[in-house]
Length: 338
Ligand code: PEP
Ligand code: MN
Image (cartoon, rainbow, N blue to C red; front, top):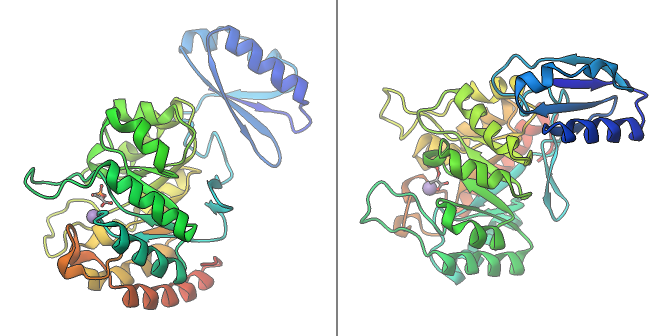
């Protein structure tokens, strides 16, 4: 249920409603828009239904949200969310945010070198996995905390923000200590316990779409995070499984405008995993930005041939630079900046 407040509702009236519903055992989620404030209520339907909410001072109307995802829907927050990532970097507004770096953190100096290059070419976030979800248990599994320390060193050296994956609930404190943005990978999109835990922290969460998940399931996973209080969620379309096997996955460009119409959350594109082929990354990035993506996350490696993971989809820095130049033109054509 959402309580839509009158445009002239006072702070005292808002606090009064929050106090009252909290005492009833409900969880109020407040969304402050330019025109009006909306309060979402989480809790048992019978308790909500029993309240004469429309009689509370400052209330204009009370409406059920009919969609299964509630806090992440545009019914709860009609305006697009702009999420503060730190360092003055914001996602969801006019500016398209570029996240780039290797698939896995491999060593300190290599990471710092690539971080400096992608920063010079327009990235504001460095990506790199220290805990890697690999299909084979015999493949490189990531450097763990050592990798997180290298990410921290690269952040100190370049001023870039860090996005890195959290795979296991037992590592939450460790990853939160180092990361600016916590990535939940495609394979964990429906790890509901993990989603609930990251919902309890305040840091932004990058939630990747499961490779066999529908858009509705994707938004329901975001709802798990939001329902625990963390609305700092960035969605990521990273390709889905189809019958096509020329590419690693099929990048679902539809998901971008679809998610934008259903949800206020920002959505970015991962053309690296979405294609699995470095030579397709630039074209798919252009399509994603033209379709309304708020950012891209791209794998870049100084020597893809020797990469510990995903070399075949990693761009060389010079190709990344060329791609960014092209993307600037696409961004401008759709009224964005990069
Ligand atoms: C990654 O970003 O390196 C990764 C493993 O992504 P996904 O979870 O989308 O496969
Ligand atoms: Mn990868």
